[in-house]
Length: 522
Image (tube, rainbow, N blue to C red):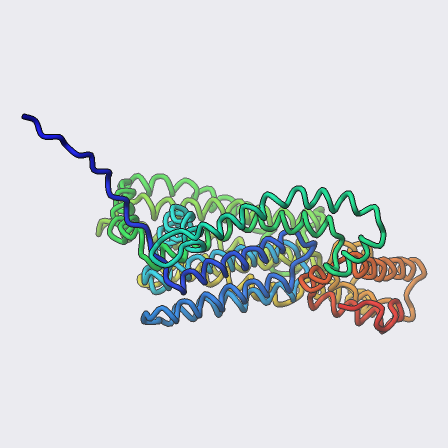
């Protein structure tokens, strides 16, 4: 007689349990990411970026220290550097620099959270930094993005808080009809004025703007908490370990040294022939004498684009040789020799191009493009110099040196308002007679950092009538622009958009009489 078998359902998988600190981190992630989404909708986000970065780093640091774990110097160095770098947002008015600062601060934050909570990563970024960054940005957080919701709604014992879920669902359902009702009742001026005083925003714009920030901030918060939870739980720690990364690197090194040498040699011969044929032009750049029959702008532009193309090719060839060449004892000197030669050739081109650019700036003044490209050339020179030194100092961590050089360069350029430097240099060079002409219309392309220099120029007694009129029109436009922004922006937008160049511009315009004292409040 057969026995009846009783069906036993499979036991449910163990659900993750969240500590009170993790539940708090989930709530804070939502709030911080809502503020970050608000920055993306603001016209400018100078002070706002600094505020959000400071909140995120400080609260995360508290979370790291609360979870009893030995703290290394790296856990303090990365957030300190990131916060100092984020200060550059309120010093610069260049949108590109602000974007690079946001990207650098975000990448540094992800890498820091992963290293601090999982005790992983190299002490100083080295040859495995790419694998660590890939793991920190993609492999660790993305599969754990869904943990935000159980962390928010899970009660003690691992059960879900069903009541809170129902309340939030009801609020979500009420968003659309509430917005329609407000839109229909907005015909009444008294209702609109009262609601505007309560929110200090236009009602419809406030509702839809905040709804957009919530929709955008939710996936950001899921990613952030997924990074924190997975790093602390050391999930996926068996993926891309140092051992597997070493095996990947070793598998990529398949090319024998004769093949690499044969691939690198023809370009060196071409460079030698090119240097010989252009010797006169290159020497003239260092002596400050322009070759005959050459236009200054073409002379400088050719130097820069030659540099960019050659440096990019050289960097790719050296990188490819280091990635794919076999590491045998006989092959090591070959790779070092070629790396040294390519580095020296590139450094010579960088020095030549900088000399050409200096000649160009001395003749026609500064612009954003000229100044930023010059700074970029200096950064490339530092990187190739470090590559040259690494051929003799084998333990030099090149990846860390490159990253440090890039961060320091970005910080130096951002903490110095390049728009103010450009405008001040051009005005003083024009007043002193070193520049024959001054392009006042270029001030419109600069940020508020150009306003103090323009005010200084307007006070010059011997200024010709045409230039004086152009400066007057620019200052009038700047004052009208600042006044109109003060009228249409919300208090939150005014706070987020505050910057040092803007404050200096307001002070200079008030002093010159273009703005009444107290008319424009920051």
